[in-house]
Image (cartoon, rainbow, N blue to C red):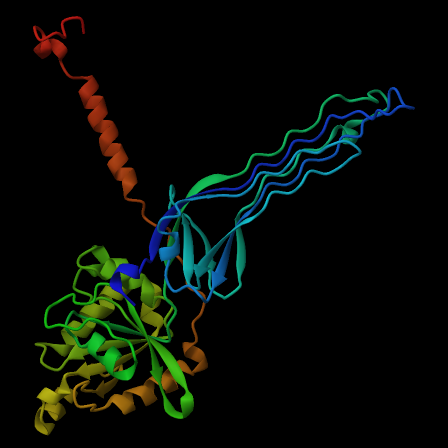
Length: 377
């Protein structure tokens, strides 16, 4: 997947359709001079609907479709005829899309399954015709109900990719290399930090035509939960993974320290991530001999399953696949409902700062502009 084509965040303006007005028509024909009211109801406005689609992997198809409008309902007419309902506007999104209110950051809904539909903004109800308002004392009402207005709102769509196992590690830990070895994915690989700028998905082949999905996200550094590096933007992509694969290179200074930093960043971002099953993979083990490998085994954390691998020589790759397959098929590791935290809307702070600057400008002493054509101020 080309990096320029991966879009996991879009902001769009949506408006559901207005309801059609009710009719104020009074019945007339050549034999009836003053018939009673027969105005029909207005049609309902179109809904704005989100639909999950397995045919979409990113939100790129919405990148330039920033305004989504549903059709308005038609008005009622004579003979108690109902107005036509407005056409619904269906927005197809990839499975794993989460929707937030762009103004408040409030969580609205979550699209997880193919074909799942959520009416995000219902259309306005059609107004009732004057036939509904006839009474014994007002037999010819000359009024009807107007249609209900639709809902106008800007929403944020965020994609959280669905995968069985997510790769977590510092930059240059060997995550993209492992993904390229065990799957047909072709992530960019180079000898410098943050080579991976967008998440990559790969389907890993296993025994007897079985397979599972592996997700590689950009490297995490200390402080990622506070916005450092690229981690904060992409940490959400591992929220839906069944298990997490921590990857730490064998040539790092302190394996236990790096493991604790990664675990702490996940906890700071979302405490529920710490409850997921974790596997530790010590990478780049082709640099080690048997004696060093035995020594490193005494330094790894005791509370996590550990595998020594090398993507270059294939050491431990099959053992890692076996362990991952065993863990993702345990009932306790099935993906459960996650709690979506409200989104922090940063632009509110910017608007407040702009308002403060405007107030300061209004209080400026205009005497400094005398003599340059501003004397009347």
